[in-house]
Length: 305
Image (tube, rainbow, N blue to C red):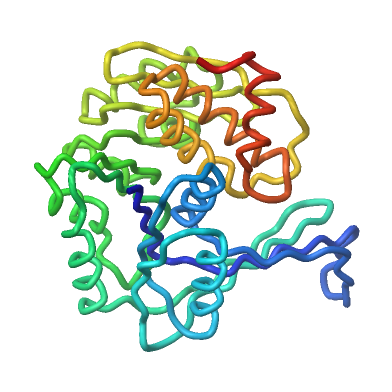
């Protein structure tokens, strides 16, 4: 089973407004509502591939109920923990001449709720994969990711981490199976500017030296690189297409990598599937489907193994 944790899930309200004018009444030309959050995005894409996936995290209020309904509708197993106060956040994403976002706060997460999360994590086995993705609410310990990995240490659970700054650096000693920063995030960690795939490689190796098993680095239009656990470097330009949606592309890359790795047991295929999946989400208004990914993969690299 593949488990994902989304500590602060949301309802994402995405509105298209051709010519948004600040301070005036604006009419929306198109609107969509999705369940949001990086871990949930990973689960949605995995479910689109036909894989069993379970969503962990915290839900509250009427928005929490709608998030639960939507993820179950998408074929995801729900093990979200209900919070008795507040409501899950609403994120507003405005698409106009420029794209703007307004992200809500979410409920306060207390120690009792965190304890219930650990009870669920204690059920995982060495046959499971756990994906930790996204930010942590201010009400939770800033060490939450590393606390979880320390708690699960030695149990053979493969853990994927998609986080930034200290959240990422603090987990490296626990040897996450995969981390997925982008080139700008790695640049911030090492106080450098990284523009090309070749420039990223030595810094990906530095992250391996600190403990990461596999390092997958997304670079938007520049494509991506993977330095795998055997020291091999995989790099590629991005598949060709028109970017219409930047939301969830990185999460889709993580999901594609996991799917490709589990299906083919081959890092080159996992890398390509990750890059094709991230790109497919960027080229569509919703998260990538299996059919979209297969089509884009074939256009870019030909038939799979």
